[in-house]
Length: 239
Image 1 (cartoon, one colour):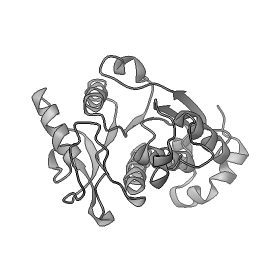
Image 2: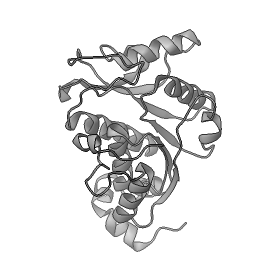
Image 3: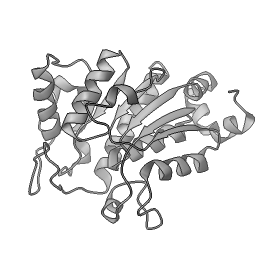
Image 4: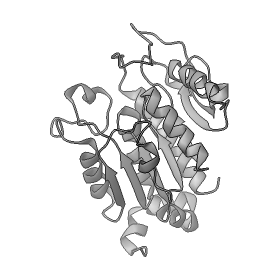
């Protein structure tokens, strides 16, 4: 698809910073975002607002009222709607030229291989189910698809503790700790980047291996998602 003049006008401020060549790189890029919750929704929208031309999204869930404290897609008007549909509508409202390929399905170890497109340039892992996350990461590594994995934002409070590093260097984050153990058991000690909060957790529970409900603050998932999008955008530009 050719770039039209509206695209250059819509992203003129972006072009002023990164240049026309890099803006066109973003336009021709295809990114996969897996999970559209508190972290993934912010990552998704930042990619769209940066001018990424094609974004594939995978999420099985619908918007719930309890999502409104932290999820960008959660509004009174969207409660009960599939997150992939809400995300597509927002994206098209931001940039009518963006291509959104949506898949309303839950990623599992059994189906992950068939859900990951072969033609993506980068992936953002924003899911927190440990089994699915392990399978997603191993699939992306096996196919040599560059990606960034988002760790846990629950029970974290300090925005200044955000870090981006290889999974092997993470500390304090309960989800990262669980993932290191899972991956080590199958022979993966590191080799991919993740975004996490380097702080001791507060709250009633930090058990990330189950579906226990955990507390969250409005800004922490967004900060993590935006950082993941920033890493993605810079990678796509070759920085």
